[in-house]
Image 1 (cartoon, helix red, strand yellow):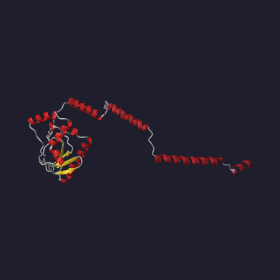
Image 2: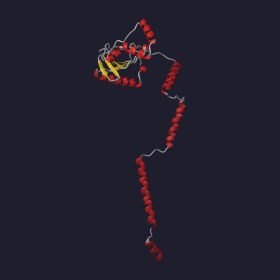
Image 3: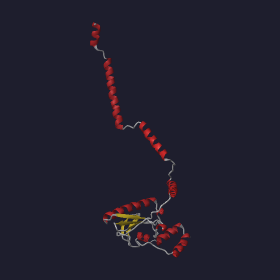
Image 4: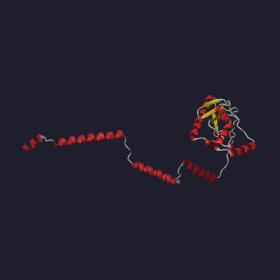
Amino acid sequence: MPEQQMTPEQQEELKEKIENMSPEELKEYQKQQCIFCHIVSGKVAAKKVYEDDKVIAILDINPANPGHVVLMPKEHHMIMPQLPEDELLHIFIVAKHLSNVLLRTLDVRGTNIIVANGPAAGQRAQHFMIHIIPRREGDGVEFKLPSNKQAEEVLDNIAQMVRKRLNEILGVKEEKKTAMDIIKERKKKVVEADFKEKPKKKEEKKAEEKKDEVKESKDEAKEEKDDEIDLDDIARVLNG
């Protein structure tokens, strides 16, 4: 699917126009200019392979490989952070099923599932989308990521910043614990578990109660027998 490209002059003009728009005007303007919104509305024809109330999937007319599918939300969203979480979950579930269908139907050996999220990441369309590309060995399609060395302290710093910010967003309290603290806590839990009486099942409790009742009945019967007067014993005592 060809994605819209703009000259630097057009981008500058659009930027100035956008700055004077309200959020509602901006969204409406984007929808009017978005060819993918026109596909969703049916104004532009496309080879549709799937549609529901939230998403639509079409064949890319300039595919990286035969069967290249473009999956997008029906509502206009430019980038992934703008999608509500329920819609985001739904679109990736559909992407999973489309990938499986392509693997089985086209007898391919893999798929690339790609999101270009933002201009710096190579996004050219003004509509969020997921590309699902069928793959075969030696098909000539290449997605190579550079492998760069990174200093340990830089990695630690990035990990700390990302973890802190993510925990703030998700409302998770981060506890600073050493490995020894975690090991000690685990050992303590094991020791405590050994001394705790395991909860008995309802059936086991009933069986034990019944067993106690039978034992109690036998003890009572024995006591009654011991209390009974043996006439033969009395006669022997008197004769003696």
